[in-house]
Length: 144
Image (cartoon, rainbow, N blue to C red):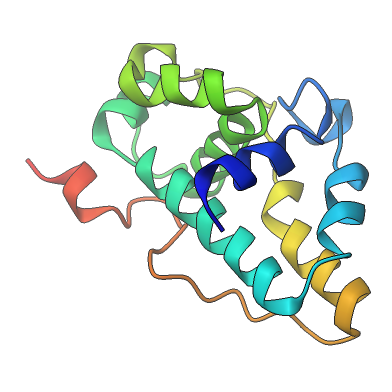
């Protein structure tokens, strides 16, 4: 899946993309579930790559002064992705635009491929990717 196709799918997300309660992922899940298992895996791969790119010390410094908020940092990075290509690229280039730590984050985007795969194939999705989506895993982004 190329980046343009990925971002077109992300644009299907309804709501503000800032947290689970104000975001509707169903249109994205519905469209993804029409695709093959390989295409769903490609979507997850791209999601992992763009989320991984935001896993840097500079983005984290804007998020929190205290290291250790791995889950909320991941879910906040996912919310940046859910807000679309334009916002994502602005934040990627300017870490000062990264949201500060709050109780608003978007965990559910992490599970979109799982749900779409289950609807499409009836099977369980294996979340493998070439990069780790988890916080603090981007060695280049955390290099001193």
